[in-house]
Length: 385
Image (cartoon, rainbow, N blue to C red):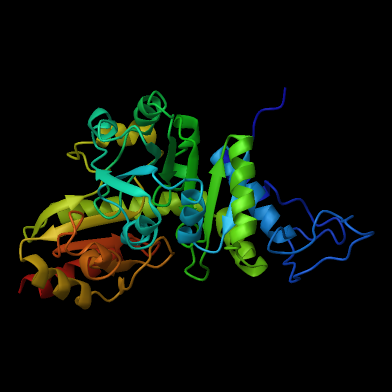
């Protein structure tokens, strides 16, 4: 019996055999919108690139393999992927989401879909039973981020999925796995129905592409999502698909380095007198460290913290870093710093989900850890002077 391939092997080879025409080891970029048919209605597997493209197919097959699903679907952005999932719902349905979530998700729910008869509720998922108690009889989708954005709170995916699937109507459990990636966490194996990503982040990994993805286990659900993918048309181009495929090949080694650097950064921040709180599930005193060890391969590369000086000090810090670039997004090889309340989560301002304006979020990159800590040290001096 052949042993199943390890993650690192799947990331490099799944869905990507050498090109049969030339033997090229890298998947070709099929820059075509249409395909010649051998007879009316008879194709060689492709007819129009919104419906299917060989480069995108390679990416989708690879995504399914590394997430442990039966089908993967690629999209033009993470928001396009989430939009496709919401299209599974009907007017009157309810969505229960974590209360600490990406601002763009909150904007999509409250500013776009609420007007179409969908209802949305938010609750902390740090306690699975309390979270599921917030579901309603009409709840059809449960959306989890774990770790959350930006407080890096974990959800017990296995327990939430088990509880959710006993509810009337058996709502789908969807995990936004962007922060963890399939290398660190496997939501489908823990009982989730759907996992989604912004492939712009760690999967692409080089800040040069925008994309999204969905992976599922159930074939019927995959068919419904493929119909929506084709009908709505929010698909990535072939070059975007190629860039994400290229990034996935090095995902494992990058995520290990991201986590090593992030741990050093988090430990330095936790020991600094100017910092009041650090959010990183790899710290020994983090209340969910045991869940992190049980559910994730390592705690990842994101760190958030609050300075004693409040919002003004946070802004001074973010504008004083030299290696950490001030910018939105995350998951690239370069380190980034941002103030979520004023940037990625501005859409939650004035809502119950509003972010502390003094919170700083770091995407810790692959630079030398000593250089990153030194940069933080000088920025903290500027912030706390």
